[in-house]
Length: 174
Image 1 (cartoon, rainbow, N blue to C red):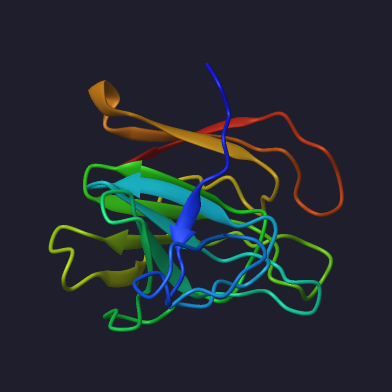
Image 2: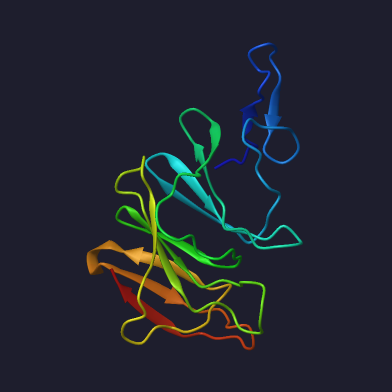
């Protein structure tokens, strides 16, 4: 295994052989300098959601097409957008990205909500807030989650809730 930095053609690449990197040069689609965001791969595109820029949480959605090496801002999304957040998880379950928890930037506790970005039709993505049925994990941030396809479930191992460190495991049947 070997690491390398990805270079992306700049808007003027056709006029010159210059390239730019994600972190320091201009791009056709500006990408914010953020931390604690999520990145999820679906159909050869990296979906980047949320994050914190030192002043506020974001709820923007961008994609990086791994085939064309181009960034896009996804602005035509149906449904109600989730509040901006950081420290959440984004887990691919089938053709949906499940967003769980995170820090909303207000109050002592992390978010206890759950959202789905339906990508079944990638030209028409749709947000929806998932109802809290059963025994949801409650507030969580800096946690981890993964989808177990054979069980049709997202497992969430809580890291914290904003007040204390936790180590409980929860299951969301999708």
